[in-house]
Image (cartoon, rainbow, N blue to C red):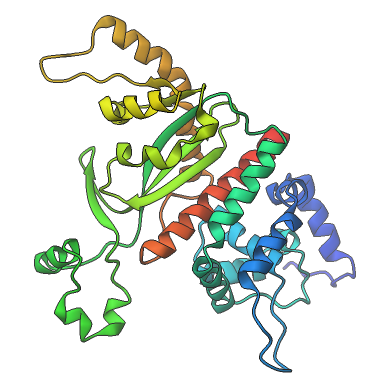
Length: 341
């Protein structure tokens, strides 16, 4: 029978060195990203007047942001996140915690995310990092790609009458009498049927730098909003005189006019119609465009595989928007680490 050896003073250090030798991916994420650059945004968003003496001091804001990034990277619930920080040395090292330090519990994690969400800070954090990437010439104005993906949330088990009321922006009377039930109802998400599959949730509309594959802009809608309806929110002055790629969902006269008026070179896939199929020349042009447009699929592929899936545990448009912003920021952080490796 194996007898456990006596605990040594440097056991934790030796185990961390072993993790480093085995290429712990969090080491690079910890060292490459300038985490302190986010502190001014966090301080502004979370600043509050002291209410008196006493009380346990709050956790460091940058540490808590790293908790959220780690949580999104592995797509963990608040309870799972608390457990994994407690259990995993690699998580503790990434957060700058030791065995003897207090661990943020699930309520602390939830509350911190709520404060950031209510302050609208996720968008500001994303914009800050994007500006840093532009200054470092990681994001360059050499063409962009637009696309969207469905972000699923917990499905709602409503009656047909309740669904009709939700679509009409009316809260069903039965829910009003049960506030605890209403809190669990997402009245902002919508069903969409695509490719023979029905999904419930929101859409993450993104614009990606053609060269670096980093997300430079995003917008959040419910799942039934068509991709083409959001492109005006994604393009801007930086796209002028550059190419914009997208699949045939963005084809049409209105978008072509928008791009022309903004001096953006149109590289949207051409679309065939009933009794007017694509010509051989149009098909060839689309094939050449696909070689570049397909790069945006790598972004969603990373979110699906490396980030453990594109779905949320939130309820409501405001929280979903913040969570999707955090998802996009987490992807950009990981992409930057890859580009600098």
